[in-house]
Image 1: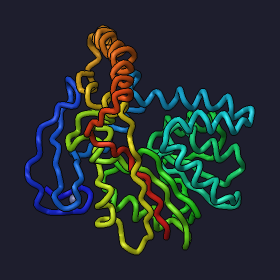
Image 2: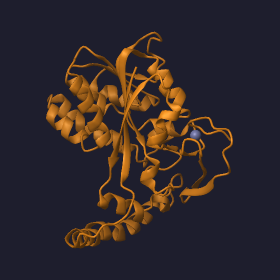
Image 3: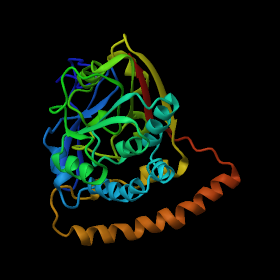
Length: 312
Ligand SMILES: [Zn+2]
């Protein structure tokens, strides 16, 4: 078994992980690059986009909500709504800092086009691409014609000044090839922005967050340098997580949910949500207050996402 990130050839047998009631995978750890990864299912993303009750439907809901502000050219509202996610805020802030509307920008994995729409609204020269035709159709419906399915409709020699991807690197088959392929589409001096899920944020085990088969790789920020080509300049920022988020991660394990079987799903979800909401909204706030007032220090991992700026 080879490491899907750095190619290390001697990966020992992993552990069996039941992500959902009806979906299990093997998880492997690479001793070379510290990544945690599972097998890759190439067809799952289109399936997730098409499934009626998949979390991917939240993307359409977000796009729909953003499209109202888009029609009103209300940049601030688009920014505030999208900026609730640190990954989106990172990309919007970094590109705005460049302060150049002439830049040619590409978003990879644009989903239903909501983040691309911020830059379209602001007059940037941008294209969004995605593997899902449904997403591209939605994006076109909400935000106009700047969207294409994957790279097929892009000119092979077309180069960009800025390329970004959000929540994508942990969902591709081969992250190294993926980065090299798109870095090749950057003009000299061009920049790629992306986020990566941090293996340290999940307590060394894949217990929560986005699970396989959707997200299939968690990365070690310190080891990014060992598999991303050294010819690129990298700036890596590791975000800190707050206590509330850490406790939610530790206590609420999504793997009781069903992934593919829909039988009794509604009933299960309601039953599960009653105690979860009680703990999150009543018990946790009380605990946080006590901890804050008594100034108790709790030793839990604080690392969260990884933000990367790659310069060609
Ligand atoms: Zn590796």
